[in-house]
Image 1: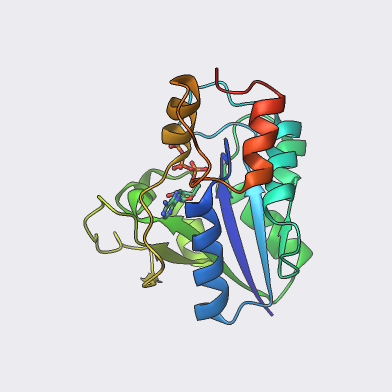
Image 2: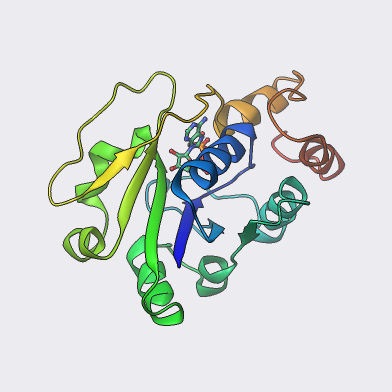
Length: 190
Ligand code: ATP
């Protein structure tokens, strides 16, 4: 069994995230792919995320009909700052013997040694990097190992979506329509 894990704030989920998942699923021969929204990202300590139920709702709407992808609430339920190593230990227990592959955008590679329990993390999972426009390719800092996919590079970010909403600009080409509707109905990011 080969499991893909994709963590992030998903505030909101956008088409860049979905293309990461699509590319990983196609290229890595994954059995299952989990989107794992963080309660609070360790890399964004000053930003209070949108309440988790709304981020989860947007993820579920975005993934409706994607039978190979699921949303895992474990970091939201755990609460506090979400450290990937805690999640990986949980998966190792739940899916003993499974191969774990952790998906990251190219912007995270250089920072991997700063992740909590970096040595253990590097031992337990293979990292798969998806290119992100504007990010030069970076080699894996030891002891991390992994590979880079070709992906479908798309220059969209959640912060860009939030900024556009605040500025009254359309986001219809950046997020699935059901996500745009949820943002509108709940007056998010204004
Ligand atoms: P923000 O703009 O708020 O920092 P973000 O768009 O980077 O958010 P996150 O939810 O923080 O979104 O990202 C989760 C994961 O998805 C990270 O590994 C990030 O690098 C990756 N990612 C996000 N957008 C893209 C993209 N367009 N291409 C490739 N990877 C992406």
